[in-house]
Length: 376
Image (cartoon, rainbow, N blue to C red):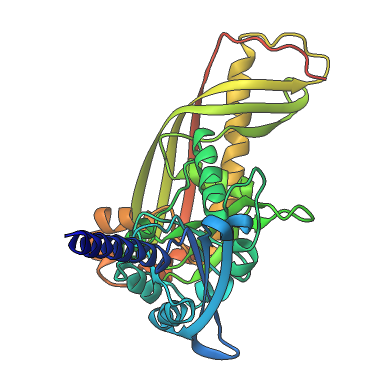
């Protein structure tokens, strides 16, 4: 009887040990990827794709918190297959927080790349996408402050921008949808590395053309203007100069409380003209003028006039830059397609866009009643 009991106990122990070992193998065989980047090197091989990943480490291996690894292969699928063979790990489904597209792969076009990524089950379509003007492994290898992992750090940076009224979080699904949209070209937030700090920061936007190829980039201030013209619900705080004609020279810092955009398209003898009309309500946050103690109520009308002039000039220069690069993130082609259907179906809009006459009319209503102390 005792031998039977002993045998039963041994069998139970072996069974439990096997179950535990199986559980360990499942964990060991999965690699949770929190960020990934893609780049190509056309001078070496146009079909070769570099695939960089950031994976968290667990247990005794967690001293470095993350592992950054780069593997190459033919096409996206080939690079990812090589990664799994090299690591002897399977990718955990739906854990990717961030996708970084490098300079070369973006310049060559992302239409096929985004389509391929969306068909890979391990890729979460709501992952944030950003553009990095270089090799993604350089930004993914950074170790941000406060022990944050790089994917989390960049996403929190984007969330902070949203709290500031600058919602630029573009997902893989958004990028693909914009690529397919008629009359609007895709864009991505652009991140660079702070010099001597090794900290990634939002530096502007990467604008793509209708083939999802890199058309041009915008700096931080230009990105604010583009966001303003996009007629989003929230708009970041902006600054304009007072020219000194009425109140003296200085700066006005303001925020947009509400805005409405209307786009009117006309075609005369095959020539396209577009008017962008912005009705804006804004709140003055701060006035910086020498020797000014209190801003009188009637001065707000002058602020509105000066701000409208400054914004019109800046936005006009921005639109000219977009036309020169032949990129249409404002979606003007959408309005052309709706308002001038016959002309649009002639198929010449994209060729005509760089030379189209585009006017900007900004009308501003300033919220009154706030006083400001002298700032300097």
